[in-house]
Image (cartoon, rainbow, N blue to C red; front, side, top):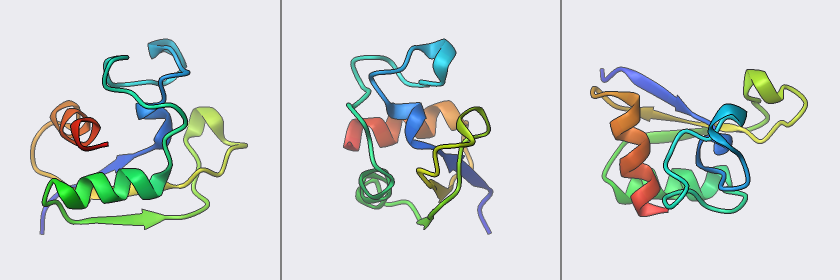
Length: 87
């Protein structure tokens, strides 16, 4: 089984700064990304992914935006770039 990586919508949100939680380059980020779009992008990239509804990023505990769990062996940074390109 592949190691799993957790992706939150805030990682791809162009409205956030790096210190607020965005983890991809601003040019690759999207306005208010949704977990379904992130899940679809992971599938387009040929990765196994599943959605966990109602989960929240620890820094944004009050926002239950959900998260996407992706099977990935490489670095999380590489994975986020790959997903951002498909968004």
